[in-house]
Length: 203
Image (cartoon, rainbow, N blue to C red; front, top):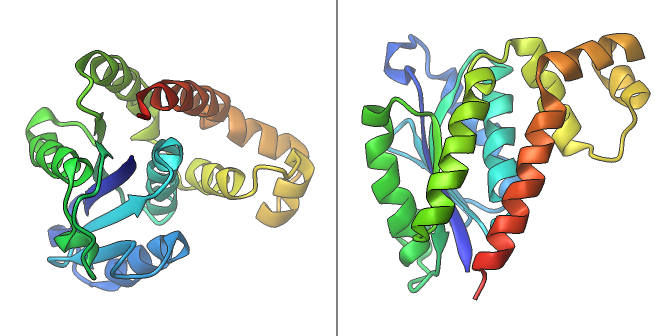
């Protein structure tokens, strides 16, 4: 089983400059080699394969946080399933993970939702998507400071508040406030729950 995130930048066509394309590539580069693991195509769309499906949600949340930290955002669909054709470019690979992600992605705009998942298990999908919609009520409005904190905390899971503060140039009390404002503990609880559910999917 693998997982695929398909996404696009929200409002990219309204943006005058194209520097967000470089920003997006910078954000995606830690996730492996392009174009086999991730690819930006058609200007503002992107696709990433996350080989360990348990990491898929946190990866999508990290991308969202990194984008919101530069006053941007993305719509993303996460698909789970197999991979039947391994192409040089991820956008040409195939399998149920790709189909689930691609088909769901086409519905996001109409649903007015910025993050959703499809595994093919309708009970699991309904439950997780409801939780994601609830979480998006605050994730969709993360301000730059909150988003920066979330991204840094996800990337450095072993750092204390004090150490995160040193990286952000703020004191521990300010870190604590940002953590609370971003509802970070709730995000991590959601991720933990998601991992338990995805484990049960694995064949």
